[in-house]
Image (cartoon, rainbow, N blue to C red; front, side):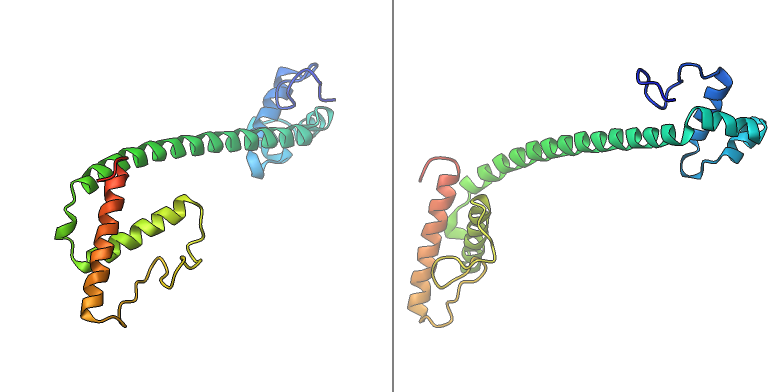
Length: 181
């Protein structure tokens, strides 16, 4: 009978040192465990090892050992996952502060129209992600976060649209540091 006071995989009351050593060997064989392997490894008669196994409930104790090892492994993985998440959050925060410093020094007048569009797309996507919005949903208005259609505009309208996008980008960049420009 497995005692209530000791863990099932520990030495049980009334279990001899030899029987305990045989159980430890059985337990540690893992998925390939068998009475025959224990008897062979320890140089004991198979019938003796079989009797110890029956009297001391090796199968139940080994299963309890496996469950405990699995529980410990899951707890270790969960802790490691938390540590990774914390480390990544610290790295992201450090990187963001450096990126914000770079963005604040960016001269919007030196951006090409395609740069302005790309910056706008990126900032819209980041903003939508920050608010938990589905990126597959269309943004309000005719354009989605990943496209800006200017094909139907005249050259003058395109220049005006680019200027509008440049001002919007400049405004967004200026507010990244907490103070509008």
